[in-house]
Length: 307
Image: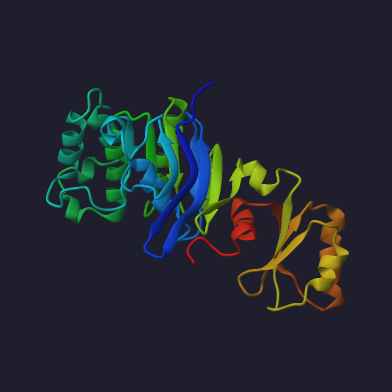
């Protein structure tokens, strides 16, 4: 049986009196894309930094590619790639010079020109890092993380600031990494990114894993659906909840936007529309669809990613 690429057991990390990670446990299987989601301040970044060897756990165990990142960093670093959101690049160096410099530090790097073409960095090649746009910095950071052919790569918000074409190109590249056997640990605020790419994912809140599994596991699969509509805020939906079958959830977030999640069928839709009609409420923009990962996230954490 293949050893997991990442194993975390009861991880605890404190910053003074604040507990950033509170007994977190998870596994990332080799050769998969694993997405780590959670509100800001949930403990995602600290967890990943413990895996990368940048922070030492206070309690618990972390194993990455079978090694302890805190103790075996010199053995682990050549085998992993890390995408940094800021720092780690000389401000005055040109983009392609930096990529070629990092490539020379590895035994069997990807040909830098291949990544320059693939990530559309040619036009930025002679521009110093300090003058790159946000999207160019993101694409360069991704290239730097993977140029050394890592077995495992940590990607932090890999498509932040990219245009739609850039996002699709990066998504295709990440999928190709997985298909080539590379394990990818992805932290992202983009629900559609996680839904499209992740083989498995975990939602972290208050320093703990509060839900984990496949996208299908978390959204309830094809049977789970949602009814959403706009209406006057602060409607009393208690009676609607009683009229719907057991297991349905009703949420108003943001104000005036109602989401009803459950095993949606024609009877459930009729119940909602009749309930609205009885109260002279127009369900504006009513939509019926499969429950999304974002809806599951809100049900689990009760707040959006950027709160």
